[in-house]
Image 1 (cartoon, rainbow, N blue to C red):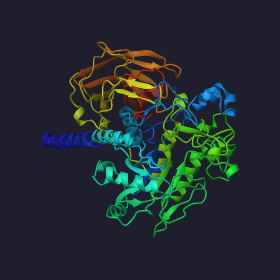
Image 2 (cartoon, rainbow, N blue to C red; image 1 turned 120 degrees about the horizontal axis):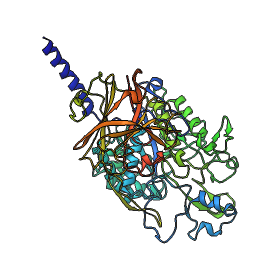
Image 3 (spheres, helix red, strand yellow; image 1 turned 90 degrees about the horizontal axis):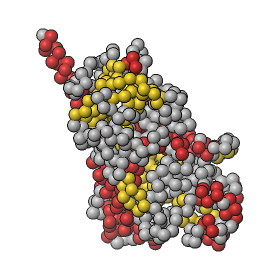
Length: 600
């Protein structure tokens, strides 16, 4: 009888573990993280379970493409103004270069001055947006008849592969010009013929109200057979360009508005279908809040709040008063879909008054500098604070959509290092994306060319077990592990107390910073910087694509405490002591500032 009960128990434990291991990748929207300003992401106890029929879309720019003059240097507005402040008063200052009206960046993206034909970048975007629980991206095709085919082809190919690798990539849609102009109709027909009618990458389409969604005006469709097909094929949501006036017709969606934003399309139950949220608005007192140049005095930058004024701190642009005020309004209106502007525009044109803008002596319209810009994608210029808007986005998405609860952990059990036995009954299985260690070799903008060959061990999953004496850590890779003599090989970082005021970015202990030999080395952080001291030697074992480590609890002060830890694995980091390296080099699970959470 005892044998029968044990067999039944073992069967169910194995089934539970197998179920966890076979499930889809646990995205970042279920994991803890704390940003560089010390702000913790909302947890399940605050936001509750995932809510039904809640969606988040984000404006996405595929226009970083084309054949550039490779002898010309990229121009960064922030760097130019910092070095040559007098240039802001002189259109002909040599710092602006010879190509004018000009093509400038307000800052350098963390992944470089890339093109959106770069598969390495596109894969990073897919994972970051999936971790944020973004449901859809809308490509900016609002200028003329430009749909940026080279970029959307590269993105669809890359995101289709990412989806097959377990990434819950956002779905895709297009935003066409703000009116029923001839070039808008040209783009609409081109996209229908090229993408939608042949059913290409249908797995990536964003459907709304039962049909593929497109932000376009159907008004000038004719009675031709093709135009009738187009009219019936899409759910049309024409874009309202203005920041002030609100909807002018009953089928429009907003892309950017001033606070307090309007609700768009009220249904029979009185719920709004859509509300926009912006990081900042290129609107100024001079134009009474309507669209204007971002370098005009009083423009509604990142630190602006209609309720509180401008954040008085020198680094107020980091704290997102504008973004949060807009999110608070969206949460108040509680629509079906929140449309966020935006992810990765980064570029700004320099325009003269004769071009129709009132900035003196020239205008930077959609982007300008650290304060007057609206990109969420992490940037290099802010150093280790370059990702603060990414986590502010995630925090608010959780409050809007809810999030999954933490998975329960298995009962204590003792494991024998070197046998790799017993892990089949340990859960949860922290599953991660595979296939994301591909090398980079692609031209960036103008004089830039990017290579990255740091992808080495493709980390795909991890587990933790415990008994009264030890913690056991397990990690596996897609293929056989490289030799343990490799630099920065299979590093384990542990936040032993879930307190970000201790350790390096909260990580109190590190394993394998020193390459393991017969034993692995456990080190404790000193002083919060990338400085470590040896604590003890650890048993470890490698078998093909698996690594297991035993950590005595008395080495970490956990011998008498219930366990509540966060941890992550990193392979082949390049910039030791720079947490932003976790987005760029080698492989890390989970990504960025996310951690796996293990609590008794």
